[in-house]
Image (cartoon, rainbow, N blue to C red):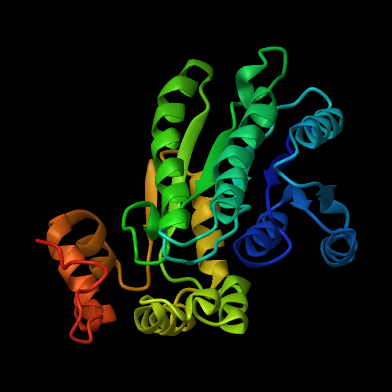
Length: 299
């Protein structure tokens, strides 16, 4: 029991969470994975076997998270948790001027508040509780290129990922008290089921009669094309494994099919240059038919 490694991974039914769970189990971990649907829990138990324990909950539910932490604590028999991987998240695209506030709140509730609630629930098992034995664990927070670059029509989602980047820095410095490390992993283009959902829904369907229609179509077409050529979620899972097991992990991993291009956008180019690049790429300068545009080109 003392040699076994344990991880909690949120949002494991598909995508990065699923691939991370599979890899960790293959590498000898026991994974407690959160799912929202009973059918997913049953499917994953059949697929992963005895090294997988489903935690059926919505990470917006604080009481359910506390109950899940109690379940994990009982299974650890006084040992510490090796890792908490905060992967669960949702995304919806829309122009911020028109997006319903409830949609934005939902993203913040899941991506930000839910992640913090999970950290608060499981941090004692990672090392904040001095009564447990073993090395302190690690927290891995899944961010995005959207945590450094705010793409058009993804303002709400980008806001949640910028928040993850910010609070992760504060948290890492606070948790040194307990020896708990915090690592951010920021995938760029990743081919996940979120892409299929975007294709099914169409680009900004509710905004087809607004000035955002044409540029919205271009943004979606670019996002879908870019993601289809993007990384397999299993590649991100390998980085998660490195972040958990490395003796000297980075504070932040940027995971991109074209690392130099991602670095240019997120770190090197001046912000106004990036504004102009994105305006040109998505055709914002054409958003006028002889009348004043609803948005002026950046100065």
